[in-house]
Length: 267
Ligand SMILES: NC(=O)c1ccc[n+]([C@@H]2O[C@H](COP(=O)([O-])OP(=O)(O)OC[C@H]3O[C@@H](n4cnc5c(N)ncnc54)[C@H](OP(=O)(O)O)[C@@H]3O)[C@@H](O)[C@H]2O)c1
Image 1 (tube, rainbow, N blue to C red):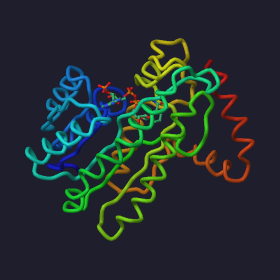
Image 2 (image 1 turned 180 degrees about the vertical axis):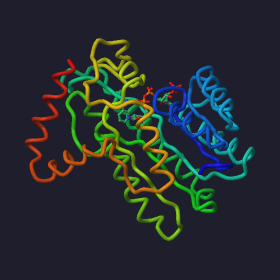
Image 3 (image 1 turned 90 degrees about the vertical axis):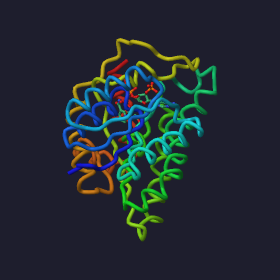
């Protein structure tokens, strides 16, 4: 399926990015793994190589344009092309807006979750056009539905969704496809630990538990791989969550109540 394909995964040092890389590895692709923590990234790259992939770990920050350029150069110098760009790096928040003391967290959220996707897509696009490649962006169900304590995260994922939905139309005649992935809460990632609190600091380990509806990384990764093979337009994971998206169109007040209840359960 992905044999000899070149696949770039951002945010591959933990959580969904690491899980996706490891799932992809069995298909023996060329993997380029990108994030700030080189030690963790190398560990993931080693595991991927043991499964049959040919991996490179590139240290860098998605909000730094020079780092993004270096990622593109490393990819092209080593593998000469790219077939899949997986825009996964992300950061979240957990704070009520009227309690926020450091507004810079909103800038960081927009830069990491949205502007980095704009920059990397722009840099990789000439090569994706050549390969008729696929851009897979990990958005969130919060790219469509608003969730309390996440105002800046929700806004960044809405921006990402809007940007890529527009790009899909523009790239139709270039045979570059765009798949937007909208997962529900995932178990076993560092997103919550690294989320900004009201003071713009990392939340750290917390007692907040994801509820029973959260999904495993393996389940989510396998669905994304299937979606990549079929070049799906969008993926809502789990599928049943689409009901909430439809309900949001006709009864948004009801969805607000449901979502508020779910968030309260986790406090
Ligand atoms: N967890 C959920 O419930 C959930 C639900 C829906 C969607 N998502 C989305 O899934 C994606 C992956 O998140 P996750 O849950 O797997 O969280 P995670 O375990 O915290 O992983 C986030 C990844 O992004 C990287 N990253 C963060 N900021 C970066 C930066 N400035 N430059 C480069 N890399 C950066 C981190 O690596 P370094 O720290 O090494 O840089 C890490 O590898 C995100 O886009 C998130 O919004 C998550």
